[in-house]
Image (cartoon, rainbow, N blue to C red):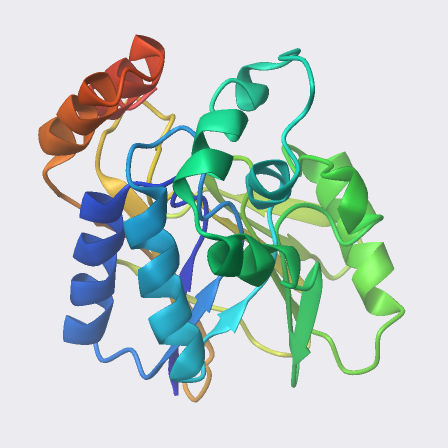
Length: 250
């Protein structure tokens, strides 16, 4: 089976649809959305509707911090992430907010654990930016039976971590489109990148494809109409920096 892993869509329907199309063209049979469906972008309604359709077809979904913010926006804007929470909350219907609110923080599917941030206290939304954070997340996952693969988002970058023969954690920077062998005798953690708001100075959308039969993980980059997504943000009178990010990939 080929499992497509998408995270941090951030209300970017253009990127979301481009990744879904690309994944299907690559033979994806199952989808997993790793949180932050909304926030920053101009099309939260369309993105949540698409996510609901996928969920009805058997897709696996977990909650991200921006999904939680859209359900219960902060009374005062303190962080950058807070800036669009209230606007997003108002765009969504009661049913859509309920859908986001009921998403779990983690899902275990056979040997796979899905989470938005770190498995180590997922409700704290800790970033898995380096080997130390990845080790803490993998250690927490090790307490769960049979988990060999942890897939997460939150950091908007594509990175693969694994435990080497000496139990040291190793970091690997993948090449898009090149399959990486991920045998079961090791434990693996992948940050699959951001579909809707890449931040590595490359505006192409990100996702990953896991072949559970061949035990190969392929990180993907997908061109999409990022200018249209940026225009939509400006037309919605949301902060211009979020439009700039889509055009520059930062």
